[in-house]
Amino acid sequence: MDVQANPAGYDELKRLGVSRVPAVTVGDRAAHGWNPPAYAALLGIPYAGVTKLPPTELARRLDVFLDTTQQFMRIVPDQHLEWRPPERNRTFRNLGYHVFRLSLAFVDGMDLGEFPGTWLLDQAPDDLRDGPAIARYGALVRGRITGWFEGASPGEFERVIKVYYGPQSGHDLLERTTWHAAQHLRQLYALAERLGITPSVPLPTHEFKGLPLPDALW
Image: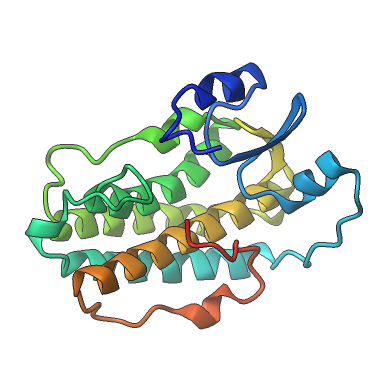
């Protein structure tokens, strides 16, 4: 269901307890987000997923994706920052900001023991008006995340966090955060090609291996 074209679709999702898209529904049951194990459970079929990468590797890759986003946002021309692609009602500026905000939300969620979906609705504040400002915000986020990982014990990733789409271990939430950032980075580079923007660094596609990224870009 295209909820942008048919906003009434949100009412049906809310009735099923889903506050955000994307989601998959079967009858009166729903699975939130890109979640192949949950899709399999909805359909009653077995699912053999790939083994999750260890937390240390996920943390390293997340920083690679954030570093790439930071370098990319520095060179985005001002005239493109408020452009919205037809695939998603989100400006270029907010998409870049979102990569950093969703990553910071992982640390906030681990610290608080809960991860409300409203965090992912945050928009870039007014003082982050251009690409370099978004990049500077990204540097602050990377510093916060790096510090958190340096102080995290292995047991941190076994804790269960109250996430808006259901209870998740810290390891599961970190994996989702990492591929979520990677997916939006892919989108930024695809949009850059469409607009004739040449990124300063290549897309680190080799770092996608082993992550449960969807095939579709949107």
